[in-house]
Image (cartoon, rainbow, N blue to C red; front, side):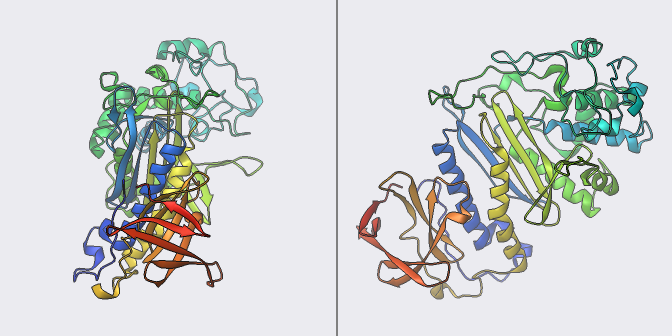
Length: 482
């Protein structure tokens, strides 16, 4: 079966799993298999040109994979080392650079932007509320408009302004809200934050980020602009959302130019995983070469809550709650690309996703990756699973694993999950909710386990030449396709 890991639960070897790679634990391999199958199906059903995903636990890259094509026309496959625009994830690096300068005493977060940017002459429509500050732009509560006075999100050319054009355009702009009143996401604001960091450090923005963040962390595939010389090979080509005609259009390479501090970076999911691992190290107090532990914790904490309690933001970091857990990270959306990075600090699990297509919910993929992988990683750390069984006690269901077509479209993947044979129906936005548990009855016959643990209909597998070729359910046949 394409992209299927054969998972056989065996007795654990003498060495405990905390002394091994967590990725080798049977539960983690099961979870990796399910995640891999689901993303592979999503890529096909959603007609996504290419994508990459990575899962990190603390300092270990648990798993990474590429799907589809970085360049459809050129036949270039996507890999975990393919570079994508990460767009607004760029803001995290800019925010870190600002906090570095704060910690060195070169600025204060409550400093007005005008104090460090003498050319900052945007009209303040609410002077009684005060001026836009550094903390305001980091939390998107400065009152500044969302964009510079240039139409750079406009197709087909997506012409971003230079630094000089942004500065010149400020005199023709005005603030949108009183400062510290509402959340208003602002690419202009984070662009100006990058300008502040560069000016107070007496260097260029690119040099500051390279010398103080990227090189110390070994992020060799991350750049503050799109590497044009790699476009179509190591740098993925971007594509549009699906049109009414059912196609995705190839988009030209864009460069964010002066907007680079807010949206210009390119990276890989594996570099984003390294970036997450650095944060886990820093929060543990084992490394403080980029930021101190307290400063990073300060950035992760909520610093802004909108009056309706719907918007929460840290210093540069987006923060959100899901199933009683707090996550930090950021998403990105630029012409032809979507991306997302999510960190769950308590579990030390991070997930990264990038694709070269618009109209794709990138956060769905990081969320599902966490939902599938985090419990398995926890089981591996705690030594839970089937490792207490001897080899002859562990059922081997691999004869039946594979993908089977449906009579009305879609497909059912048979795989091993928590030691049982299960079926997962694709396409689905929630593979865990689509799991059907099966209980072995006799020979090649299984029955569905209902939610109340009683048994439902039978699944009868047909075996030919030592392989499962189909199964029958409710008198209907489902042929194996992979």
